[in-house]
Image (cartoon, rainbow, N blue to C red; front, side, top):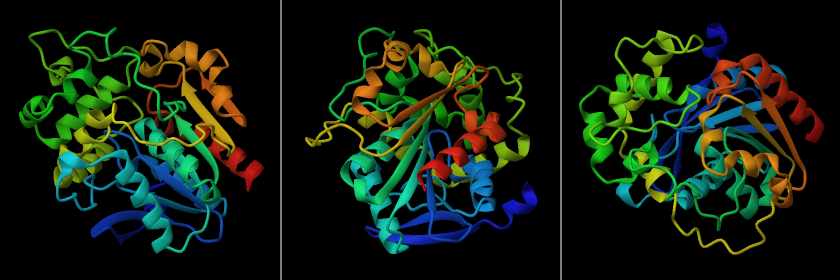
Length: 317
């Protein structure tokens, strides 16, 4: 695979005054855009980019503003999901791409679905992993039911995660979060403990995540830091997006969930996914459950994920 990694081109697209990094492989009119989560980056999609390019698609994976090789915004603390949506539109316009498939992971599902709501004519279909669609007006259900030490509560508190992460180098922060998020339990710290303290330095990396992978992530986050990443998604989760249009997604959607993903432990999440409620908002929906899948299915089970993606693309091309 790493021989093919060399074929991925890296370019910068200027959007709203920022130079945004885009990884790009493959050619042709059918384009797939990959949107990463946290603590991920374009590199998280390495297996999928090569698979879809080999199958005849063009694959593009940007780093969001303030992430990895992309410029940070002048005021990271004011970044919102609307910025990510507008940046995506700007990238597609700059590259003269009229329509795409969106494939997103973790919080990347939010800009993917919002983009499909706001610009349905630009989207052929959406695939998301780890996070199902929720209407833009819905609010997180965990606010009052999870303890103060829940990782999202901690990371929403200005300065706290910065101090916690600041004790370690970027590579170790990514390492710890990968280990935490690969587990099946919600990351919750005790009152006198920080989130980084939940991982012992002797804990091994997940078997599907190599030291070479960690090195790649470490370099990218060393460049960008975590300021924008803490803002979007964690500190804007509750923002009113001001989107008042019909909240149903009109394009075909594939949602992939790992049964061992800690997201299933979010209050109300399993019921929401299993009850059929999701289908009310996403009429053309297919859900696939992977029994051994964790939060990082695209890196943990690349062959299975690639096959699911290529089948979906083939149906809706």
